[in-house]
Image 1: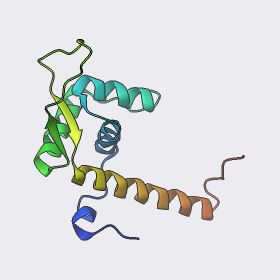
Image 2: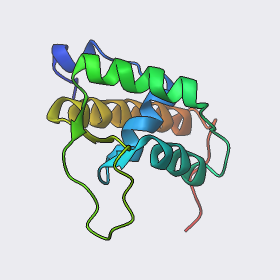
Image 3: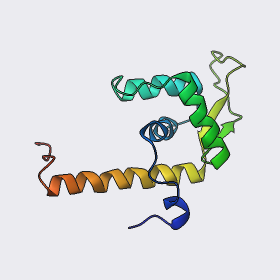
Length: 120
């Protein structure tokens, strides 16, 4: 199934941009937490500089895929200088469409025996 034309116009995403959307998929985060999430989830194979991250954040804010979150952690460990970000509905749809695009590529690679199926 093809994503609607509005969503498809954002694809393909750069790997760094996709990783930022994925980092926000499970909840609001501030910039440093996004950097740590991407690094941890990729086993340090993707490491974003702060300049790259904040350029991506600026783009995602401008395009309406993320927004600043007004929510703050309740545990008292918050730094009021931090800005938290969250996915918008558009951001969720774009992330899902990009994940589905990758899924199709992996399926094609498997059908061509370029990538073997995982053993159970």
